[in-house]
Length: 170
Image (cartoon, rainbow, N blue to C red):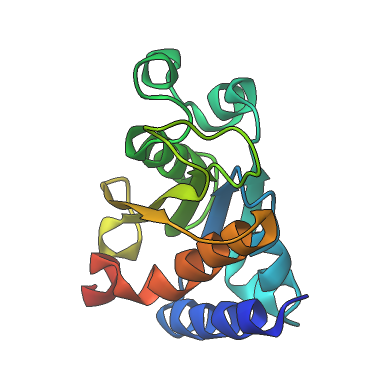
């Protein structure tokens, strides 16, 4: 496992554990890479609830409640889709914070509008760290390099940005 990802996961875990929060992941293009980095850390079960790998549109719909209309209108690689993935992951877990990732890791599959390296990410959290009122932060980034580099960059950003969500103020 990549040491940089494990370090980022450890930092995210310390941040979450200090607040008594748990994390859930909803991964598409990263294929469980975030969850794998987390579970490299002994004791991560204290702050990691579960991970969903939803590579197909069907799995996004059945496991995370992503709406068919969202996928039809915006595609799997969109901020709208990762927003629904993150909210669905929260709804189907005991977590306080969710990370969702969907992208085009390549080497094929890109288009002029959605090129290889484009990744959409979302972080969702329950207001106050618990309860039902969710809030979401989304972004789209473009990562350079081969498939491995795109997946690594997306996983690293997802983990590093946990402490940058507005949930940090709770």
